[in-house]
Each structure stands twice: as C-alpha cells, then as structure tokens.
Length: 153
Image (tube, rainbow, N blue to C red; front, side, top):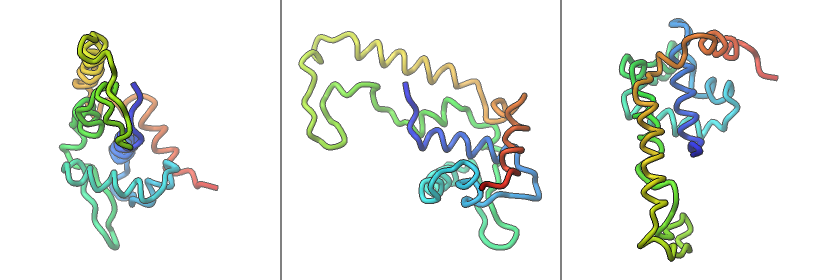
C-alpha cells in the first residue's frame, strides 16, 4: 500500500510541530520549505489539519502553526484513514479518476477484493495505537529539529 502524498505530508507536519520549540512556531511556508514541497500543497494539508482541530494557525507577528493537545495525542491510524479515505486498494468497479475505466470481469466472484480490504484494515489497525507523540521519540525528534534549523540552499 502506498500513502497519498497529502497523508505523508500531514504526518510530517504534525511530527515537525510536535518537536517545535515553543518560541518558534513555524509558518506554513517554513514547513513547506523544510519539507521541500510546494507551498500550495502544504497550505491545503495545514487547512485540513486545522479543520480537524489538530493544529492552530495564527497570522501576523507572533503567529505560526501550533500543535494542539488533540494533535499530539491523535492516533496515526485515524489520521491515515482520514486522509486516505475509505476507498478500496483496487478499483474493481472501473471508477477511475478519469471515469474511463471498465469494471473488472471477475468482480462478481473474486476473493481478492475482500482479502485486500482485510489487509488494508490490518494496516490501519496496526497504526491505531500509535500517536503523534509516539512517533517523534528516539532519534526522530532531534533529527526533525536539526533539519528545521538547517538553512536550505
């Protein structure tokens, strides 16, 4: 299974904010530059995280992004589910993004779809007990801080 780019970025934004020093709340632009992603993509992800009440965003002097307590204790599995959606791993119905797909001829008698759905749920379930605070322990937190302080060329 491969995560959507927005899911990956959402997790990294939350991780970055979890290790942020309280006096230096990064802006969306700071986070986008540190993670080498387009600002518009970061802004969409930050807006969704703010809507989910996992972070706050303040404009102006003294502003920036701040992780909420809910964001710190959020389940990684729930976050991945929220960003990935409820879709199946495979498109058996042929409802591709372009709308030009054709349904799989095996869909009425195929056992693969169910097995893949079970595997997907097992993936999410394995992430459920982990929180954002859990995934920044050990070497990850200090490395995130170091990356954030290193000027980009």
